[in-house]
Image 1 (cartoon, rainbow, N blue to C red):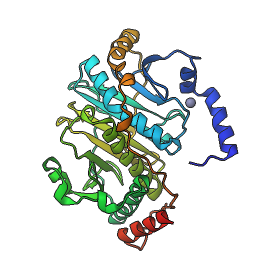
Image 2 (image 1 turned 45 degrees about the horizontal axis):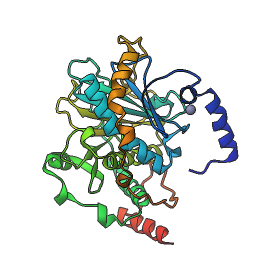
Image 3 (image 1 turned 180 degrees about the vertical axis):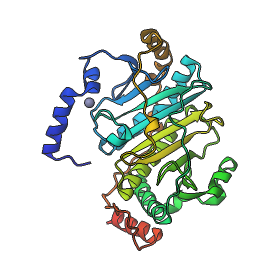
Image 4 (image 1 turned 180 degrees about the horizontal axis):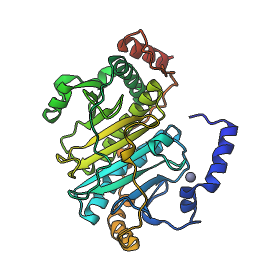
Length: 348
Ligand SMILES: [Zn+2]
């Protein structure tokens, strides 16, 4: 993303006051559970529940669009390892990831990061249980089906034929989802669908095609890949629906609100005063000794910073900038035309 000098000055001013930058600079203390040169994980001092962790980019990126692709890959590649460390040190069955972009989505600070919530049955945390009662009209699903594949194709810089693998390649455990939803995008690793009924207009769900059902079983590269699909899906919905914000919510492993324990990334376009306010939590005084907990988690995360494989990071091709529709209006050309046009532009 190109940043004008005025905008950069604004960001620099933000950094001085930013609470996460202050923790990173050591000006205020943080309960660190993991740190490397690009990222930092700290226990939330007002946890929504036990083990509530905030995982941050060290650099001050106000929104996901500011994050360079290699940093995005590194950061989201760490999610399986962090999830494993949190789950094993706190002995829980599941984990949630919560990402908010925009005020109406619950973004509190202009500094990108995610919340991780270790989960278990009976923990009484139902913030990410969604009432699926909203239908998304066909025009919108067509718009998403057009725009998301173009964005993914630009991102990976490869021919659609290599990733649009079709129904035949869908593993058995996803066949029901495939039958009962509208496919928005798929490749050899990810399936992004619009369910018949969602929590909001444009609510998409992303599944891994790997048989392993928990996030901690994915490789760093596969985790980054799923999150790239999620991030682009959120952008496609944000622009196409003129939403006020977006959330990406990952559920993985058993908990009251995810009894089957399936790994799903929910993409939720948000509007001011929509019905998803229940996702937010009230800051609460911790019931546990956070220093003792941080030490316990750190014992499990130290390995993470020592065994990252560089070869696991996929090659990134810088995409050309292609302007998307940006409105509800669906373009008259077909998805194939759009993709062909996108390829033509790339080859220039
Ligand atoms: Zn900051």
